[in-house]
Length: 324
Image (spheres, one colour):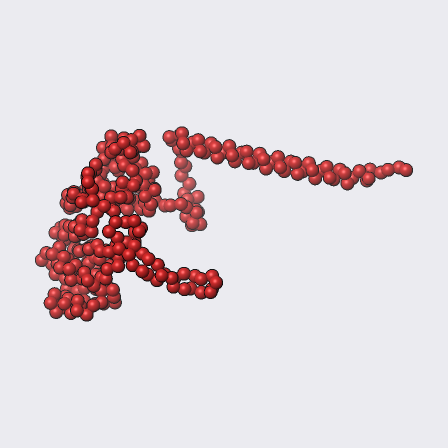
């Protein structure tokens, strides 16, 4: 009986499916090998190459910022620092920072250099200490502007940073604020306010009394703690519930001029302390820093509401106040 070619068609289709499957697996293996080779090259470049090339693409940058696809955003220009530090020097602020901190047994760097370095971190918008080595310590000219020598930048201030092309370890900068006491911080804040008043940077007689929390970790020395209620979404109940949470840290209480926002007095206390306990002492410090100038009107936050204290402000200190 004569057989037609149609009898072999199912076998040919099966072979074609097998060939396609083998070709697909082969392409996937090539893709995996290519990605593995690219990753190996990137890792090698990260470890061994000193120079990396960057290309400017403003459209791509703008698109990523709009879409939220960015790890962090920072400015690359710091030309204003030259005039800014000249202003601080003329004001006498740098001499104010030259203090002997009680939290240090031995100082390998002057405290003024540590404080100005930390100030640069804030002014450059660096949010994390982990970003300091490659966003701040790479700016050699900027470090030299605040007093670091070429040898300190290249070899470090001790063997811990030798050969890493950084003046200090990032943890040294982070631990600096932890070692400063409340009295030392208040001394710097009040001293800066007094300098600004003496140079005539204040023009108004209306001031604001306010407080802000400074959260820290549980390990921070000298910190306080308080219990707060935080709103949290409960999946089972399908509604927002209040959960008790412990917050560690400090609280800074300030008096600042309304128009210029210049702080004329400040005090750092533990985070659980009530603001009204320090109102009168802070007003006395503010009046001392202001010298011959007077506080005519004081805008007070609700947290400072205390009948005896408000009566003292109005009748004994002769200061009008408005609460909110």
